[in-house]
Length: 134
Image (cartoon, rainbow, N blue to C red):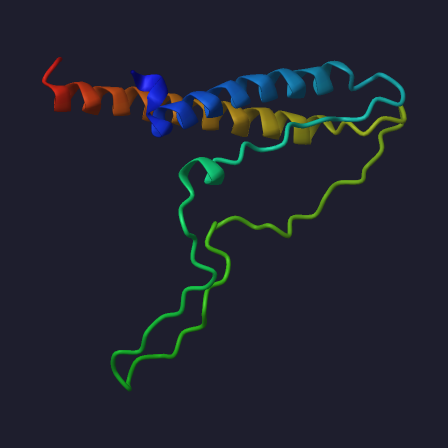
């Protein structure tokens, strides 16, 4: 039943992606001393095709009074810095693994997984309440 609901399917897919990413990041850390090893990461899951929600290209504030300060349009609706610099540091072993970055990615990945798992659990609870089961 829940497999047919796109929301729960997307949450399950996201949790599986976070689990697979944790393995890839752990492999990067395990090979930090391996000469020539190139750090890897997983490509993010694209849920937009599943939900096909129209995203605004720009959001502009509206002046409702002449005394209001004029605002500027917001073009990035994600809230994330997409222009983050990529690291090109190469360690003395000749590989591209930077332990600090890998540990930060693992921590962020773990927090994201916990967030998705909590959302899944809470959504199941709401669904049970709506159906009338406790």
